[in-house]
Length: 564
Figure 1 (tube, one colour):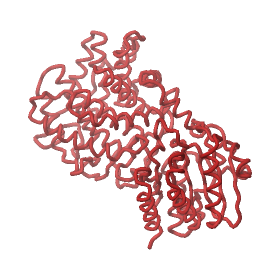
Figure 2 (figure 1 turned 120 degrees about the vertical axis):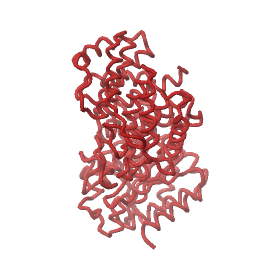
Figure 3 (figure 1 turned 30 degrees about the horizontal axis):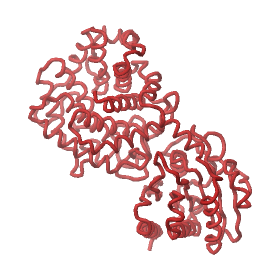
Figure 4 (figure 1 turned 180 degrees about the vertical axis):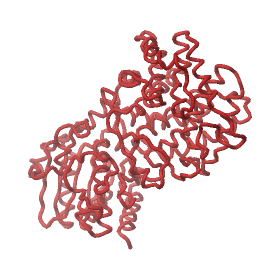
């Protein structure tokens, strides 16, 4: 039996032993596109719980004996029944270096890297050709933000070590402070990991024979004494999440939508978001005069010829700015942009859309052609739009979309574009349009798998059908926006509200006090294989694409809550 099968069987047994307590997941993807298996407690990401969140980490070395020790620890915990599980929320990464284990190259990973090496990792998230495991583990642990990380290593004698954030546990365990190079526990216990806060960490070296006694000591301490409080990392996430939607929207509007260079939707969406935010808070400073000055040069020149759909969709602000200022020139820009879409015939994508029906163009065309119809009532715009949306045939039987006809990959933001394109189209398409029911069917068939694939943190994976691919910011915003829009306008059931709320939780935790975001997939054209999608860089910091999508999501959530 393979090592992977042994771990899978062990996790299956644990899921049966404690039904409803754990779910199977993955926290990363190796260079061989193997998943780093994870077991997630039901309260690992919950907003409110009195249970102590512990993340058990094993097999970082890639040695089988360490993985066996972690699996044994999980069996012991499951066997402890309610006495343990009602007090402790235990999640686990039992084999953090599966390639090293499979290839028998421990402590390396077979790709030239060593997941147990120096932390925190710098750059190359999550595409490092040698050490991807290190990037996945670091980000996953920081944003799960447990109250304690418990690492297990096999050893002949018992030894407890703690990081600087876990000093309260030292006396009861006779533990020494971790020394030596900057390993994972050391890095988690100092400074502000990933801009959050410290996470207490302990390491137990013991034989399989001594493991039950030592774990019993630890769990008894945690059950009986209030010596472990909420981690600083979790407190930071709680503080981010506790901000109102309007507060977060204001942070985003101050950071994004301040430029229109280059002319592309990534600049246009946050400009629109600033105007939408002011509509909700009319007593706030009106951004329209500033935006008008910003856009005057473009407005005076008109929409250039020969620009791509992504540039045409940069005008999503135009009708809103016309409403805010009474200047009809902005509405004229929408009409100009819409007139750049030329039919190629029934069943074909209009110019300038990609003939292979890329999902990006679903959003770009829906945003522009829909607004043009709203302004003019001219059905030529909805006819072009409806034909394009229903003719692509890139939505699969399970509801997800390929990136395009030639790229049969379920890229997260690609499906986000499809979701937003369908939502924008349905916002403007008349109720009696011949394609409306078909498009509603496409929309609802997409919403269901997006909800099903949502990570317990609320986020979507960068590649939707590969658990462990990184939790991606923009796709989550786009899903949340599209669902909130659907419920607000009546073409989606209220049953999806928990999924939207969970998405907002994940997004709000990943926006800091100046609008920086966490792990937004970089600009992505059609890729050649799934490895290329997995290797798209993740932006941690300022990103106008993400800021705009998050701003739209925040405003749409506020509109939904206000019922307007």
